[in-house]
Length: 361
Image (cartoon, rainbow, N blue to C red; front, top):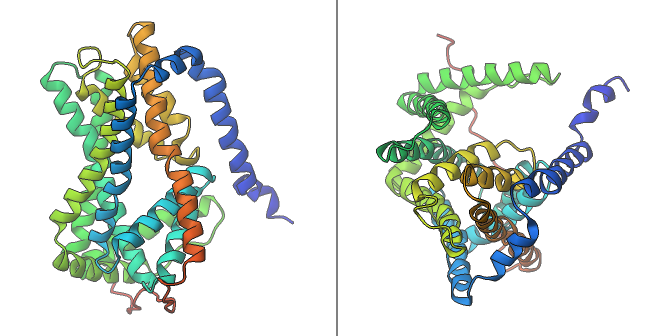
């Protein structure tokens, strides 16, 4: 009884209501102030069949481009398994409040049913997450440099890129320390556990323990993985995936009539990079509303109304192809997984290897 007043705000229903309210506020109030929906629809319907076909082709490539990254960090994973698990988990994360955690559960369940140990899947997800964050934090810095070469880097972008660069340095530094030795891995694990426990204490939840041993075990697994499949392949496949997503946005802008003179590809890359960082905060499923508003506002600032309408149309087309399209495909993949038993090979749940705690020094 006493715990309920402090926990009601963490319920899925409350989070779902907040997400729905944010989405309704954005699309019902803020977005119409940037562009008229009627004019946006006319712009979209003016695209030729060839333009629509090329957009669809690039959008499908964008979906496929992430699967080689998944097989690079998990060598035992087959491409078809990567496709089914990725599309299914994406559909969950794009539609459910707190969908990121639920998507992890979907991936775990599917891969375990195909014979992949939980520890192996967990390692792959952590490594892919680390590399994806490297790219997400690095792209804004690259975009700012490209804009600076053309004399278009404003003060706001400079501050944001500086913050992103600082975060990237910290993340890369911690990862490098973790890989350097078992002792440093344990130090990183203990330090991270203390930080996480401090946050959990505010939320009145129990502290975490054993992260030093887990960090040491994780270090050994990562070194083994990178020995089998070098980090160059993981880096390249991760970059290709992120740039494929950017290409969908850039092509949508060009197909609705926004020229490079009006909005340069460097500015599109900068807006794309910074909005992706902001939308990583799980306020709405898949950043719904936040991405549309952020991109339209960033790219259309100071431009004529006609160009702003074209930008809004391109952004909505981009989101339809990258946020909406994976949902029905993911539902279909989930149904396929439920029905198809020929891939199944259950394995027992495996845990991280247990090691005795290392000395505190």
